[in-house]
Image (tube, rainbow, N blue to C red; front, side):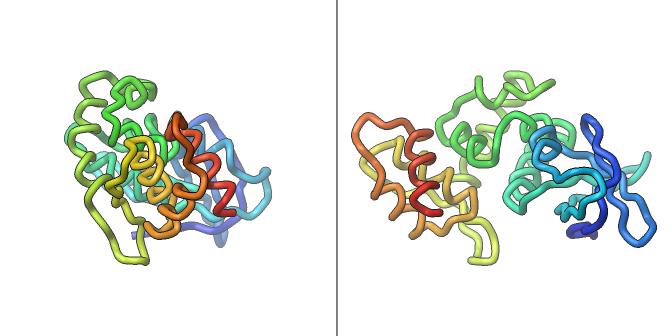
Length: 197
């Protein structure tokens, strides 16, 4: 398994890039969000990768962060969601936005990716809800635990920050520090991120 590739970025396409490492050019499928965050051509880039092995070939998919890769792995674990469907979701939504949409059962947001219909979005929300809300990995991985609080917006914001890689303690402190009545989860996350930087 190839965990990541570091090398010279030699090509950027609509949905793929080529990274050269030791004289070998790796063709890597990417989301449009990842493509938008890449450095310039001929600069060094580090891409976290997922290798898909099928009868008709081997395909690499790349991500700028471990959080994106972790969310990609969660999405392809959903029945009926393949790598292209997962990339379609990640092309329009960040991992935090996906987590917020899942915990709030926001089917409209989840179906905003190209080719992602209502039924697929409903499966994503259903199958990932427990993973996003209840699973907790070690401190080496991303934690997806939501806290029980007096506000669903606070809980959603906390889940989003945890998906972004902050510890439960860090996220909870930041959310509590910035929260005011009437704020949306998106507003809380924006202010909390500023407080965390």
